Figure (cartoon, one colour):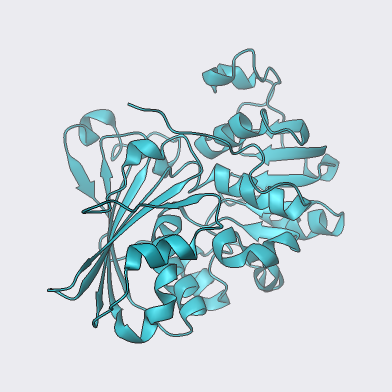
Amino acid sequence: MADTTIVGASGYLGGELLRILVNHPRIGRIIPISRRYAGKPVSSLHRNLYKIFDKNFEDLNLEKIDSDVIFFAAPLGDWFKSISKLLERGIKVITLGGKFRIQDAELDREVYGGYENEELLKERVYGLPELYRDEIRTSRFVTNPGCYPVSVILAIFPLIKFKDKLDLKRIVVNSISGTSGAGASPSEFLHHPETCDTVKPYNITFHRHMPEMEFILGEKFRTELTVSFIPSVVNMSRGIMSYITIFAKEIEIDLSKHFNNFYKKEPFVRVLREEKENIPTLGSVIGTNFCDIGINYDTKAGRILILSAVDNLIKGGSGQAVQNMNLMLGFDEKSGLGLVGGHP
């Protein structure tokens, strides 16, 4: 059994970590950390955990933490300075924020700023098992991907075999997301009357997840890529659907069959194989750790059209973090993640 600590347990990602870990067969003690709510019952905030997880939030004291794994689901703060000491004590660290995702010190500084530690940046492993499973297994420090990049990177990565036929300087991505992607703090932009019955594009010339997509895909494709990315918030609480267009020269094989073969051993990627069009639905992934992908090839226009659906709080967040933890601790990768979507 392993013990875990969650820093930032009062947020949406922290709440989802708690919800997953309380049913994890290999997890013992769970320490929920929240400076703001220290001393208050976890279920006073996460009401879905009433009579399921009855502990109180604890204040942050990193020197006293003796867990096997610590999840940082809190905004970047002074805790950042303690990561090296935690690692020296043999505690494995998983961060769910943006810092460390881009393994380029200058670009990381430009996009996320604030605290810096190039040694940690060199050590970090990008926590997307479908691309970096072996590295995650042997790592003591993993950084979780962003929610949008999970949906986009998994959708594009199988095309690496055909990279010479792709226009990698014109990758077009449009994504819609639920409002939970912005976190639990209230804001005027996400106030219900402002999001109801509308679609709200934002950060259309630069979103901080765009360089993350370009960096990780560029690392794997071994070439520079250019992603044009427009995210939009829609009137739902959770979920991401990404619409991806890649211009390509003639590709003669069945791409949906290729994607199926590519991901056939992956427990959390499902590729659709329909008679006409391969179109995933958000409802099928909400509440799960799955990424559902549908790929279609418009031969007349020379465009590959990919749809990718994830739950931004699970495969795009806390479920992904638990999947990484399982690998780091030598557990079954699927442990605690047998979550199935509802229907209807």
